[in-house]
Image (cartoon, rainbow, N blue to C red; front, side, top):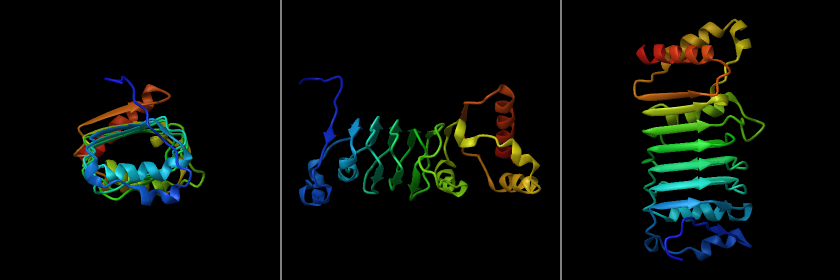
Length: 216
C-alpha cells in the first residue's frame, strides 16, 4: 500500500513472558519516528521492549492506547520527543532517555519515574482528569517538578496546580510560601501557557506570583 495516510500497528502476544526469545537484533531497526495507536494489556511489555530496541528512534507518539497500563523507555535510545495522549489506563511511566527535549502528556496522571533531569525545550502536562491511582500523594509530583524545572516552554492544565483556598487559613501557610519562593527558580522558563481557570482573577494572580518567583 503506497503512501498510506494512516498506519496502525497492533501487537498481540499469547504469552508475553516469551518475548525475550523472539527479539530481533538492534541493528535491524532504522526507525526514527514511531506512532503507537493500538496497544492492549497483552502487549504492554512488548511495546516497552520494542521501543528500547529502536536505538535511532527520535520521535515517539502513543495516542489512544486504551489497553496500555505501563510504559518503560530505556536509556540507550536517542529519543528527542515523546507524546502520550489519551491512554486512560496508563498508571506507570518510566523514562531513562537523557536526550529528551519535548514531553507532551495528556491524560490521567500516572506514576511518573524519570531517571534524568531533562533540559526540555517544550513540556506540557494536561492531567485535568486527576491522578490515575487512588494513593496519590503530593510528594509523588516532586519527580515531575524536577523533570520540567528547566523547560523553556511549559504548559500546565488545571488539576496540576489547582488553588486550595482552604489552605490559606492554615497556620503554617506563610512558612510554606516562603520556602517555595526561596528554593524555586524559573530562570530557564521562556514561555508559560495557563489554561483551565474558573476566572481571570485566579489566572492573573498565579501569573504574577510566577513572575515574582522568576525574578527573585
